[in-house]
Image (cartoon, rainbow, N blue to C red):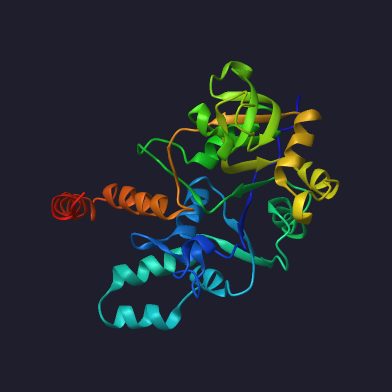
Length: 304
């Protein structure tokens, strides 16, 4: 009788970046706290993990990121003020943000790559698997019954004995040079969305493309990732890349990719951020009608 794979109980969210693409807005406010409609970007990431059953959030932060941790803490004075004014629903919503997760913050003292940021969480996670969610990649559910994207990866990992699974999305082949690219074959275990990965290429140069499968910012990492990261040599700029450690897993015990269901939007650039805000507002019953009306009015008023 086989031993069940260890359960994923922690998520790691790297949040040490400077947010230079969102200057001047991100000069004094962490870009992770910029709101999609009325909800900070990082809260949407955490809510995806919570919906997947994960309760421990490890934030790998840098300087001037204290407000992220504060956001997931209790705000007694504000909650008390809201309740005294009869705004019980608003107070309950604030309290729920703190109730849903345990947040642990770890400082990444110098920017040495995504692999280095993930490795910084090892003392908290221990020799256990973990999930990594990147804050620029927002993946919205497109139906109420749809599993959160990270839950889809967790289930796929369980199906292959707890091995690593990363999120994949098909893109036009002429755009694959902008992404990490995964090569392999789909249909592992009879699942048409599950790929056994044979190679990972970080931003393949134009003309060398062998796949249209882009790696998106969701990872379920097995406990063996920690040794792989520790033995990953720094690359350009002295950075330790997660892709290099994942490639080592692919060559050894095996690595898988999963073509998730859901609507992914890259909120890491200005137009993508606006798209995410509009998509999120249009999906909410309390904002949908007003947002649609506003969009139609602007399209008529603003010259092309």
